[in-house]
Image (cartoon, rainbow, N blue to C red; front, top):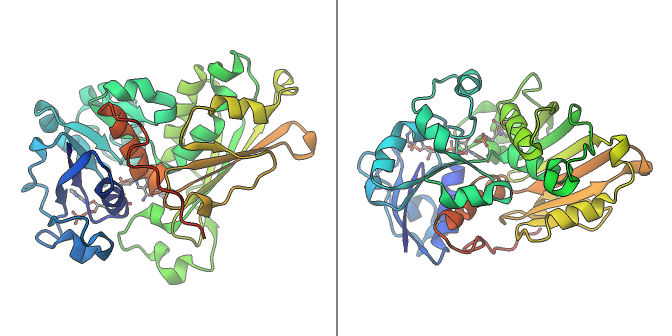
Length: 352
Ligand SMILES: NC(=O)C1=CN([C@@H]2O[C@H](COP(=O)(O)OP(=O)(O)OC[C@H]3O[C@@H](n4cnc5c(N)ncnc54)[C@H](OP(=O)(O)O)[C@@H]3O)[C@@H](O)[C@H]2O)C=CC1
Ligand SMILES: CC(=O)N[C@@H](CCC(=O)OP(=O)(O)O)C(=O)O
């Protein structure tokens, strides 16, 4: 059994990790931390875990994280990098749900996250945690910086149009003018008390935010450049807050080039994702719904070419807490420990 610790067990991604790992046949959860709830039984705080998780929250200092095989950080940005060195000296593998190990450029990290990176050497060896793109590197990684929630939907939605594996090196789209119109449920903002996510503020309401620049923009651009193998990427990314709890819906708009006008994009996507257990390319003309992935590690994609014109519209849905966070983490952990990638992740979505 893989001995797993979770730092930040009271947040939304932390409790989602508990839900998934408590059902994982190869995992034993041995430590779960909370500074504010230390000493409280996990199942008292989350009755959904009664009879399934028999642990109490401990402070991060008391938790025996060095004795784990893997530690998940479901914490704010900056926490994982402070503990990474110590854990690595004890051969503990690290999976960070925050952004400490995502952006490779430390100046960009400081600019967007407002903190200096404390371990650039570990950042240099860390692998970006998006299994469909980076599978082989994740298998060998000691540190994985799991992809962000919005970035997962945008990168997987665009990868077949940019990756030389499917384009054969041709520029099928104008990479400098990509638009991502993305919407998230309120759980994306975490469990902390904030006015914007109060029921009376967020329900019966809909708005864009961070149009000037969201911290996921550099992460998505970095990822798209890596997928494409060139730097000609320009992205307009506009996130929105929707009155739902879980789910992300990204609507992606791209302009086809002359070289890309005569292709069958349905076939291109189906072929690119044919062996991916968590990516469902829906039949042509579909309109995927967020509830079709709610609680599952699936991501559903549909391709449209309105009026047969030069604009391709790609619709992508995922559960931000599963494929956008904790499920992605378990998928990467499976790869790091040589397990079948779908182990513990075969839940069907809760729909309706
Ligand atoms: N919500 C989402 O959809 C997604 C979130 N993420 C990322 O995952 C991380 C966790 O997100 P989320 O679960 O939403 O956050 P929450 O705010 O819901 O939870 C944060 C957790 O971290 C703990 N924590 C806070 N500060 C510290 C600290 N300094 N040291 C140790 N533990 C700490 C908190 O417990 P306590 O204070 O009691 O210790 C709490 O359990 C964030 O970095 C977020 O950006 C990534 C993808 C999607
Ligand atoms: C709705 C909402 O507020 N979403 C969050 C993003 C989710 C998140 O936690 O970001 P990471 O994936 O980088 O960890 C936001 O826009 O800041």
